[in-house]
Image 1 (cartoon, rainbow, N blue to C red):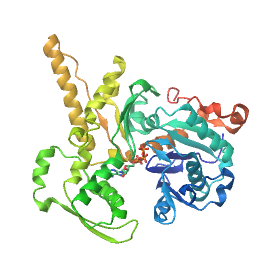
Image 2: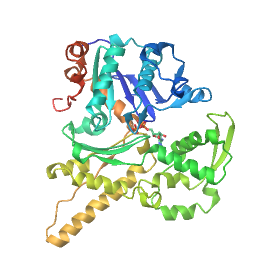
Image 3: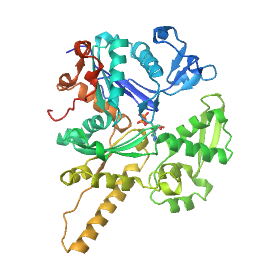
Length: 407
Ligand SMILES: Nc1ncnc2c1ncn2[C@@H]1O[C@H](COP(=O)(O)OP(=O)(O)OP(=O)(O)O)[C@@H](O)[C@H]1O
């Protein structure tokens, strides 16, 4: 329908992944942050957008002394539409340098996004930016589409564990359809682990300025954190200070040199997924238990596929050994249940294979899946064109056309 490449925006609570369809990597991964004087409280009419003095991404952080920093997406959902519109404006014209009238756009949405949000996305894209066409894809289905699993089996049935900065979801998908009634939300994600590490550094009085603390904690988390096999044994090992690491960096806000020690928080941070009851009163179900109960809640004929096709998506699934530990504890849990069944019934059930798939593009799995899908022949079937929008209005975006079944 268009010779110009489809532009793909996967806007997350922490980071936006931006690029062109058909590529294997996004052109930009930038913080979904905006800093502006207007956010300090003076409402802004959309007509003045071009004149506004605001920054996005890394620049938003760099200018937070003079401009108010805010985040238009919270826990996966857009919660400030004016800021989101300005963020899109800057990413379209300045970063991607495209004329939106000439391109089809693909946006992504979290599971259970209210239809009103989808309509509002369509309204902004068509009316403010006059895009040539639009498709809004469900993040989990896109992650599954981009996984090796789909390439090998051409099957869009699997369970996606999507853990980003603000939210973690377990999403079962059957033949390209999300099983909405079984989605599980886990109130632990990347920013909680960053906060945990920041608190550990602060409690130990590591010499880091308060303004730089969260960013230093994030960098430490991304570089040094890992999932251990046994927390108690690992704690004993860390009694020896030789196991501790040094962190050297430059403060993002102050520009000051940072030299700090990093200790058990390297494995205690990610451990919150596996032993949450030891860290927080708000949540006590380990990730493997949540995954198991999600799949057990799905129709029985799908369960084997859902156990054997678990796909990881999002930055917070990248901790070293995350998938090994999940695979081990999950398989153990399932084997124990089968053994209990065998003991009580006297029958020997067929083994169930649990397979947690980790892969190269996991960090931006949703964007990658979107890129592959938008470059496939099926894409033109699901896109809403400008002409359709002009004829029917935002309600065309209310229903999501499911893809995959016809591929
Ligand atoms: N190597 C890494 N190890 C651990 N965490 C990482 C790594 N790289 C990035 N992260 C974390 O992943 C999170 C961002 O992931 P992602 O881009 O998938 O989230 P998002 O899409 O912004 O958020 P959400 O899905 O919650 O809306 C941040 O918390 C970031 O610190």
